[in-house]
Structure formats: structure tokens, C-alpha cells
Amino acid sequence: MKSEWPKLGVGVGLRTVHYEHVLNHIPEMDWFEIVSENFMDSGGRPRYILDKIREHYPIVMHGVSLSIGSADGLDQEYLERLKALIDEVDPQLVSDHLCFSNAGGDQLHDLLPLPHTDEAIRLVVKQVKQVQDFIERPIMLENVSSYFSFKHSEMPEWEFITTIAEEAGCGILLDINNIYVNAFNHKFDPLTFINAIPPHLVGQFHLAGHSDHDTYLFDTHVGPIIEDVWKLYQVALKRFGCVSTLIEWDSHIPPFQELQDEANRAKKLMNITLDNPYDQRRLDAHPS
Image (cartoon, rainbow, N blue to C red; front, side, top):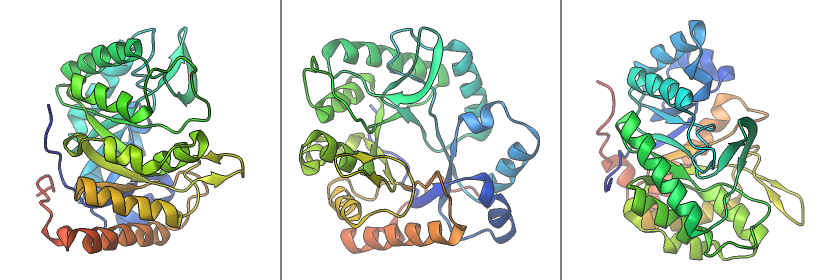
């Protein structure tokens, strides 16, 4: 069981529209997260950019196509490409989503939730162990947003993800916005979710914006983080401590300074909530 994760501070996603700004200004940012698939098969300028940025910042890899809950089993070719990138980049953290995204050999291009059943737990645990053995490092699984539930689910989402992480020996990437979205959509108290997760399992937070459609919330990663999600983040900080935090903004991406402002707010909340741990954090993975 992975009981301690790198404390990296606050980072943002590395996006093409910000390449030039980051390279030219080397902004004050603790780390960057890359979408694994964007670099697995790319060469040329994207990889050159990544290599240059790695000279200044720790890198975290976050995937969207592992499909850890697929009943079709794991895609070995995908795993080989993922491992090759991991071996080259040497990221501080590797993660994907607790979901399935392919079926019958087809990529569905969505992060679909799993039924919360013992059968699904056994499948995911088996496949997480296979992934971790193959890439030779632990992974984290992110709680996904959802807009429907399975009538034959046997347990709440927080019990489902905790059981998987404990039995598979992996970590949890706790997406605070997704907790908020699902709490609204499925009518539960988000504090119940947060208070049910064992602190030693959580290695990273995600914070993001979402869209309000009156009767449901939609996880769009667009726009600034709303005040209620910031408040939930403070609750999570009190429970889990100084966890590496990512600001997500994936569509209608603003100038880099706006992301910088969101990251600075997360740093400030980290300091206020945890009595200045940001300045004391152990950057045990910062590049020399």
C-alpha cells in the first residue's frame, strides 16, 4: 500500500495555448499535469516542449483511456505505449479514471461510471494490479462525474472507490468538483463522501469549474471554480492535509494569468487552512 505521496504544491494542466508563455516566462508554478494520450504518440514540437518544461517543473501524468473498469480487459498495446512515456518522462504521479471508456473493442470517448458492485470491485482490483505490475509503480484512480446511477449498485460511491484502492494498493485522485457535481445530481451530502475516504489513500486533488443546468450539474472544466467548491476544498484540506492540487480548465482556456490566479488562491487556502504548510511542504520530487 502506498502510504505517502509526493507533496508538489499547486499545479495546472499543460495546454498548447500556453506553451510559448511557459517557455518564455518560466512562470511561478509548482508543477504541470499532462494528458498522457496527448504525448504517447507524438514527437516533434510537442515532445520538445515537454522536454524543455521538464527542465524547470515536475510533471504529473493523467490519462483518459485506460478504461480500468472495462469487462473487455486491458488494452496491452495501450499499456506498452503508456509505459514507454512513463519511462521517458519519469512523472511524479500517474493517474486515470475509475470508469470504463471502451466496450466491444470500440473507444467510446467518454468516462462512463461503473456499477458499485462487488463484481465490479473484483474486476477493477485485478486490472489495477496488472497495470501497476506492468508500469512498475502505483497509480491513482479519480472519482468521475456521473449523470445516472445503476439500480443494482450495492454501495455508495465512496465505499466503492475506497474498497478498490485498499484492495488494489493504489491511490485516489480526489476530484473535489466531481464530488460536488455528483452530490447535487444524486442527492447526497458531499461531506459524507469526503469524511468516508481514508486520508492515506489520497495523493492528489483536482479542482475545476462546471456548468449549472438547473436540474443537474455538468462537469465541463470550463470557467472559474465556484465558491461552494472552494469551501469543499478547505474541508478536504483539513481532512487530508497538504495534498498536491491541480487546477483544471480544459475548454475556452483563458490566458495563463487567470490559471495562475486560481492556483494562487489554492495556495492561499492551503496556508490558511493548514497553518502555512505550503511554505513547509516537502518538494521531494522537484528537479535539480
